[in-house]
Image 1 (cartoon, rainbow, N blue to C red):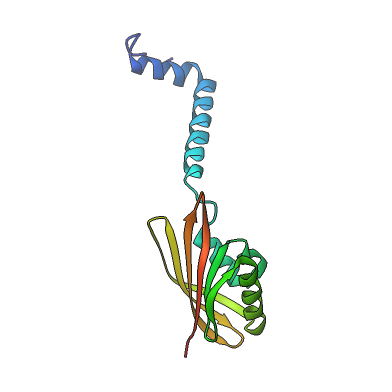
Image 2 (cartoon, rainbow, N blue to C red):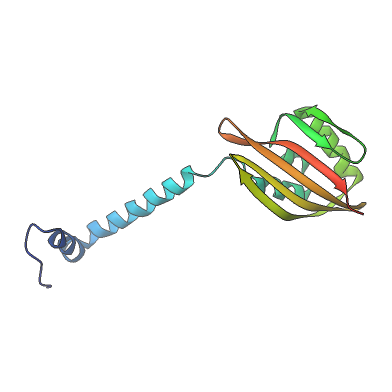
Length: 153
């Protein structure tokens, strides 16, 4: 049995918990881990640019359209306009059908005032496109508001 510090001191309390009540210390550690995990999870945004880049990489329009805002600015070599969420999904689906996605490489990403952006290269069956994604915080979610595709020559 260890030599305890003087009774009433903080060191006495911790020595008592550590040596005399190991189960109490295990419970304390467990609660501390759960508390830290909850704090860290509370800072995660619901959608982030990495999830959108993953949807781009797989060419999954249904997954990608889940991140669309009510209106989305789309710029491609032959068209450029603002579209409703439904129209944007159809346009991107047509684009991905014509240009089958092979990969999406993120070249640069960043954040500014709650907005996130990503610049990358979309490799398709018909060539490469420099792609810019722009997301903005709307309520408690990041929403995709702009997609730009520029052909790489």
